Image (cartoon, rainbow, N blue to C red; front, side, top):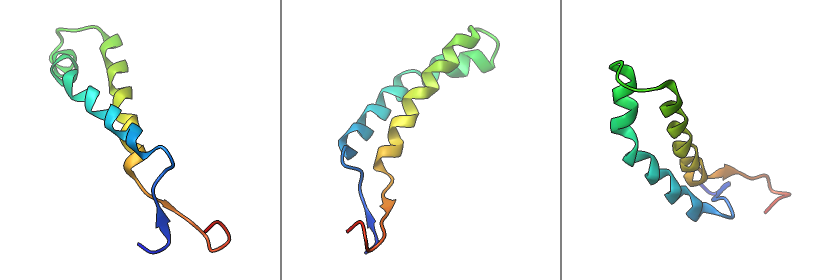
Amino acid sequence: MKDYKFHKYWYLGFLGFAGIYYIPYIIDFFQGNNSPWVLTNLLWFLWFSYFIPEYTTKKER
């Protein structure tokens, strides 16, 4: 873990929790009860990527 560091804006990863609110709607789509547009709510989960540390080289440290 020595060569890894968090994103500068790591706290934006908390926005990914907004996607949890939309899970029932997404499940309804797969059960055939909702529009395909509801799948755009999956994009909220992309914010979780800010929690993943990045590998840094010695030059960047």
